[in-house]
Image (tube, rainbow, N blue to C red; front, side, top):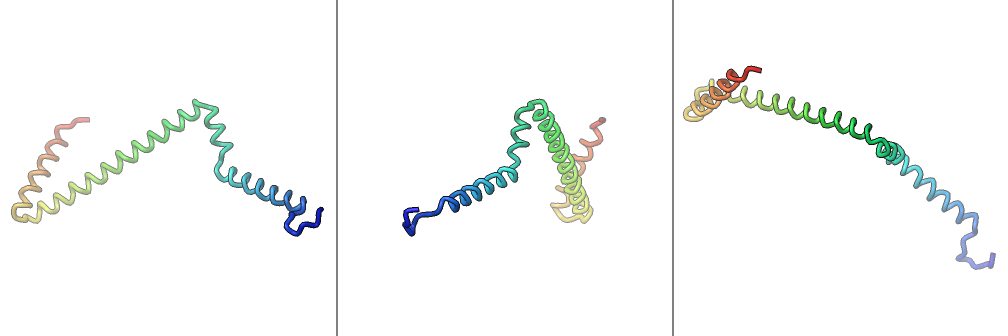
Length: 107
């Protein structure tokens, strides 16, 4: 050592580098970079996972829309049963049209 008060001893430099390297390793493990790299190296697994996630997403959208539409139709039926002027006739027409369309569909 040259005796300069601003100079950092080599041991402290090594400790700082070690702490930084350890921190980077922990961040990479949290990011799951190794699993992502393995996934990219097996394209069939990547395709399969995307097919599964797409199917699940499509099924979720279909079920959600069905629930939403059924709720809206139910609310319209309740409002139609209240015999509100003008609105009641309009809602009743919409409900009749929807029910007629449902009866025409034979799955």
